[in-house]
Amino acid sequence: QVQLVESGGGLVQAGGSLRLSCAASGSIYFSLYLMGWYRQAPGKQRELVATISAGGADKNYADSVKGRFTISRDNNKKTVYLDMSDLKPEDTAVYYCSERNIYWGQGTQVTVSS
Image (cartoon, rainbow, N blue to C red):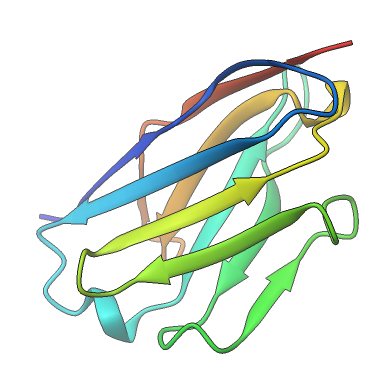
């Protein structure tokens, strides 16, 4: 059974930075799978933030976070990261990581104050 656990969320002022982590357990083939970060703001649909290929070479970002967020992974640690900088109030959401859009974590809250 694959389990994903996000951490690193919190309250930050606009312009600040946070690093989110997503640790996978029970995923034997973690290093072979696409991983992604998603977010859901109150009253809105869940949206894609960033994805990273199995080896980490290919990364894709939502237009709204390009140049501010960086996704990375450490396959030895079975962990995916999301480095967020220049945070804006509109980045406030619950952030989820996903393996292949099949397995999901419980989410971590990010709140950006103006």
